Length: 175
Image (tube, rainbow, N blue to C red; front, side, top):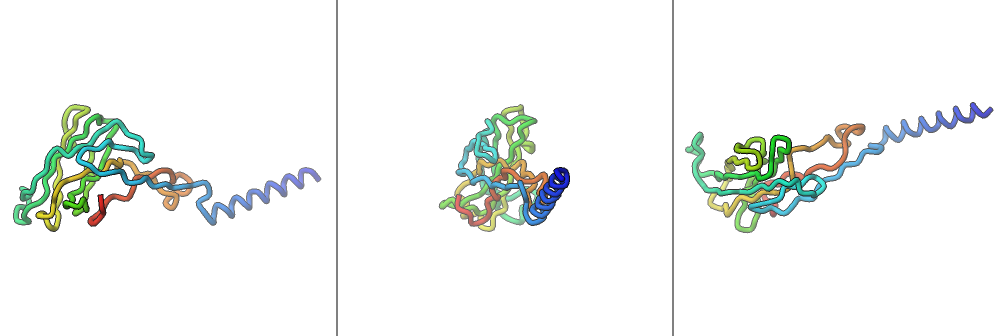
């Protein structure tokens, strides 16, 4: 009698677990980080908003034709530096050409792993082919690390979930 009740209870529990797993992402949650304040020099932060001990900085920028496609006219050529980065911590941040109101004209992700130099002081450059280069007033970096974005609950309810970087900035976003 006792074992029949235990068996029935266990069977009921298994059925409830199976049904709840089919109808939702049971036990899986996604969170998206808030976009940090853009600047010329930023402290790179993880998806929880904690500093990684790495700075990213726009060293300089100018408008000039890209050497491989000079016929396309002026583009934004910028140089950046990651300070405190090494082979293990390879952060990535979004670099955005902005107008005088800090509205993004075009953004791209720049990676410390694409920069060169001694550990702790990696430098690189990038190009942004904005539609109206005469509107560019500067290049800003967004501090959120974009180098790692785990799978979402929707993609993998068993192993997905957790914190994610904010959506990358796009044309027209106020920074």
